[in-house]
Image (cartoon, rainbow, N blue to C red; front, side):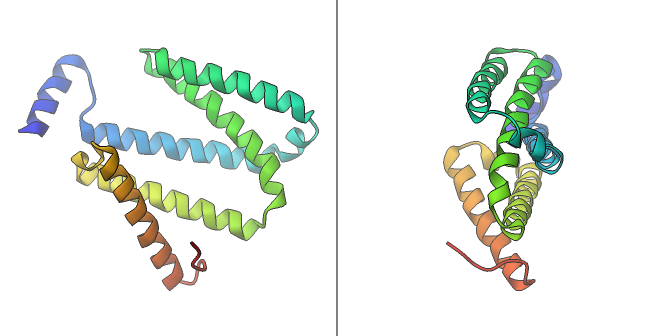
Length: 162
């Protein structure tokens, strides 16, 4: 009944179904990770040359503007631009910070995070109701982390850590 109600409402008001919404959110998260990876690979030396105080001030100003754009706009395009303002700057900060970390640890974190997001996209498309409450979201996330870590442990990709 609920799915039918959502589909009927979505046809009338051009809204996404819960299933399509979950998939769209997951793909937007993957887009953010791709941008962060590009920033870390290609822009590290550029950001390392900048003044750290200017980076922090610029970061705060642009991220706050991006959040406000995303939050208060009714246009999906403007919200996506605001999201990208946040993502690009997070990628810039990560490109500076991750230089001090072991590449294997960074890759383990990246692969684990992408695997969890893919699992959440899959679950959100198969069971669209699963992410309707915060408790369910947290439960699925913790379960996803445990499953991914167990799989990675079995194939020898990572070592367990708490």
